[in-house]
Length: 286
Image 1 (cartoon, rainbow, N blue to C red):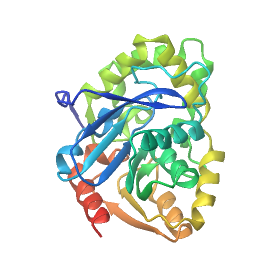
Image 2: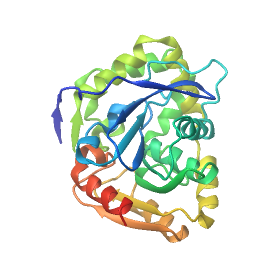
Image 3: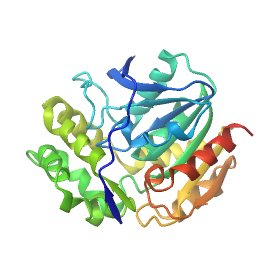
């Protein structure tokens, strides 16, 4: 595994959509068929910043959901369960009047993508799932300690401080089994956002409390009758979200296609962004 301190992506200025959770920031990059990308927990839109340059001719929408690295806190009474976050994604898509959307999710963002597809499919044309929470793996066993963090006094602040320390990144239950290449700039920026605002830590805790296998199992069951095409593009080296999860999903969802991505762990958009961009482009233009 290598570690990089990549310079921050030269983002356009963020825009804000109104959702039932409150304001949600998003980045709007390029023109063409719309692709909406959903990030993992304790992260924000820059999780996907290697993808837009590889997708010329596409309009890439990268929201920052209130899951721990956001700048705009959700409303105090917001429903930040996976179902509530999925509804916020649908709100954003509707607020921007997006149609024929390709939804792409990774890690916990993939779980939310499944719930969007199950509960709010109206403006979707297709879904791409990269290595992500499915079935009983929400969170996966290795990250089951995440469910305890909101109940530990100061747990979210302690997590943020730990994420700022390079030596922690290599640990298997942090980023050690998620990626071959740890991006230090992103991780520190996400940790800073979590540490800077108590309301952001409150939101992160609420989101994590809302994780659980019931929602992913219900979404998977609902998707057995979907007409939406799914591309399930899975990093072959993943030992957190093992390929058997994806293969089960594709066996149960008749519109799902399985593709293995060699040389990648969980964070496919970090390890093999060029290959993922090729697959997304082919999938959209079929």
